[in-house]
Amino acid sequence: MEITLTPEIEKLINEELEIGDYFSPTQVLHEGLLYLKLRRIPKEVRLENLRREVQKGIDDIRQGNYKTYDSADEMMEDVTKEARAEFETKKTNGK
Image 1 (cartoon, rainbow, N blue to C red):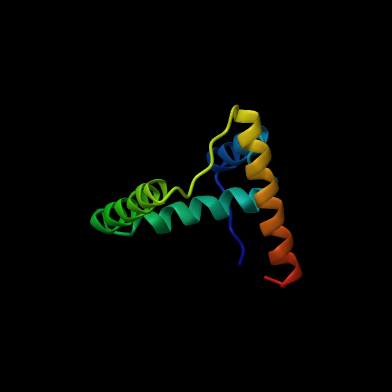
Image 2 (cartoon, rainbow, N blue to C red; image 1 turned 120 degrees about the vertical axis):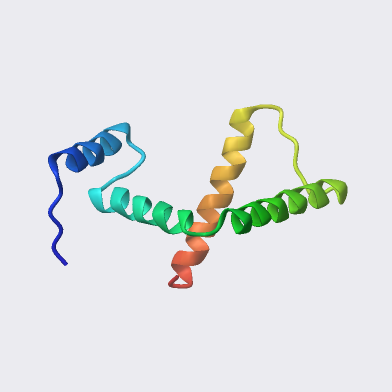
């Protein structure tokens, strides 16, 4: 597939790359297309999904399934550790 970008779109992609959230133009385009796909999901369905996720969080808190942190840095260390472990698991399993 070959795609021709307008100068305006190319500028937007470059701006996203400069911010540093993406490592390649392909990543920027991929994210944009995923966003478009999500927008096609009816608002009622998205809202119901959000309600379901919020309820899961409420249920977890009521059941004591949560962690408390003394600082944002402590929380980020934990989140980073969990993300790395998940990444390694997926890499090991070939997914």
